[in-house]
Length: 285
Ligand SMILES: NC(=O)c1ccc[n+]([C@@H]2O[C@H](COP(=O)([O-])OP(=O)(O)OC[C@H]3O[C@@H](n4cnc5c(N)ncnc54)[C@H](O)[C@@H]3O)[C@@H](O)[C@H]2O)c1
Image (cartoon, rainbow, N blue to C red; front, side, top):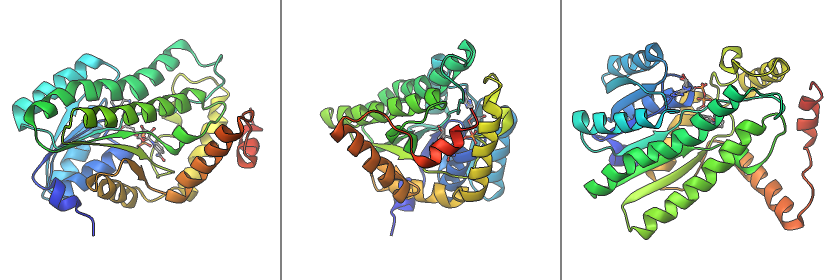
């Protein structure tokens, strides 16, 4: 039996990008587990909607508008949360965007947004909150959203994939830093396989090159057909985080497959090669 309720009930959770998708699923689950949930998102209406849902079910939630690509907004969030709600037990650095297109065709703005949201958003989330956590001396959990994509590569999703590799190594180093400090802070790297969310919706691809739309549509349909149920996936994630696991997977078989492929690639020092399924998808480019 998971200890998620024992560990999290009565604590404060802060989740970025919680107005939709995995962030919203984790926020709802944290609310069910009895946490006070700070639902943050760049989109105010979405954040307020998720907070209202949690409250309607008898939970505690507050919506805050935060753009994770701006480090000073994460500083403001950390000080505001501590002033209003006290120590944070669970921080989930979740906000992220997918970007599709050949490296040289993606406009500067979209490159910057991808790096700033997916990498800097997580780095500065930790930079802003960790000092408060360390200062309190209390047990706390930090979970960062990587992806199975952190263990593999995919041309034309280059911008996204490289951010997930970066997040994975960041979380590994952070875990060891907490160990060096002997801090009671657990660090988890969440590697979802595929959960049903809005990440591949057409509107989320603003600023991508024209050629991205067909790839985006195929991924959207694949996710709709084969993605894991969001609520189920988010329940599983928080169970593993509560258990203090570093590796958190929603579909362990997908994670294992990616690890096996990566291990063989590194062991053999072979040239990068596309999997059969990827070849079919990339035929459209
Ligand atoms: N869905 C999956 O199967 C899957 C798989 C692997 C990894 N992930 C990761 O999970 C995380 C969430 O993805 P999702 O699928 O739920 O996406 P989503 O698009 O459904 O939701 C993302 C949320 O983040 C918010 N957001 C976007 N830019 C922001 C910013 N600058 N500041 C704050 N909030 C912002 C959006 O408004 C939205 O509410 C991402 O880091 C993604 O890479 C998802």
